[in-house]
Length: 455
Image (cartoon, rainbow, N blue to C red; front, side):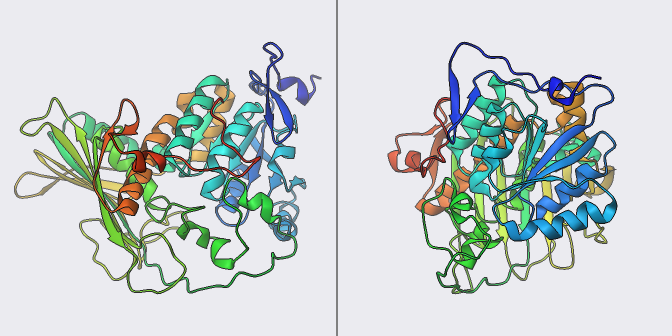
């Protein structure tokens, strides 16, 4: 019988290699397609919160198995292994603290990256260079530059790369896009993304010793070296610029992707964002209320040749707007008694309201209910099917689309942080005559955790 390692092939092109934390990987290494009777061996990197959903998502598929776990917090391993593997009669997975060591494991075909945002792009690029198929959680990059490099890596190496925009797998979102792009709402000139999530203060936490069992140097990775504090660690890292992107880059990037997809745009020419961190005096750096507006060219449109995308984050007492409420389901986190998350589209013939599970069009001046759609998919299964079929389209979440949607998040945050409107060249992918804004498209990296210029 052919051994498993025979399904992982490496092609050496010359003597050039890429060093990954001291490890050498061929510049043209890539994973092959598993055989017809082979399951895809998946490693989940980051197992605290959302990582558990990834473990469960792959474990329930007949053509995949989770064979390794990786996390910088060793305190998590025993409980995760018991809960998700041994108590269910599943084989105990391999355990890694350092993803660079995991990438040396030739038995691992694919990785699912569920780290904090500041690790997403670098962890993905290193995995791609090591020949692993990659599914990376949203947002796929912590800044604009990283997204550019991630797209370059995905296009260079022969692996499947799936962005974490999971709604792309939903029949609901697919039929929404088909309806809008077919012109059934007329000229769609405005899309709105809503991210209203009830979030309380995070308070203040002091700097303190690193908890036992935590490799904090690895956790920091590309970010600047700072003392440990609980409000810069589990989950609350979202609200620190060094690691997160605020709620527009947390929950909101899902709805940003839907808004951009439905509107049929990529990168904007103008960006205006304003907001603030209201009500609370705490450690949060990112805004809890943010209004961002993006302008795109629309040469085929009537009147002003433009389209507008408006995105709003709210954190406290609010109304539903026109987003339909629903009974929360086990896999439905978008809408609950506290949250209203979804999209609105406005066209010449009516408007559309969409949440994660369903959409409804309302036609004409009387807003008569028109066509609708619904249905959830399985982003994990789509990733595995794409690997087995060697077909990127089956992943239902192309990394270039992920980059475009994340780019809007980053451009909006830059406008907010600078406190002014910005003009952007979508071809050169630079702000126009604005060195201060352009400097914020990337960041300084902490060696050796550097996103490479040459992927």
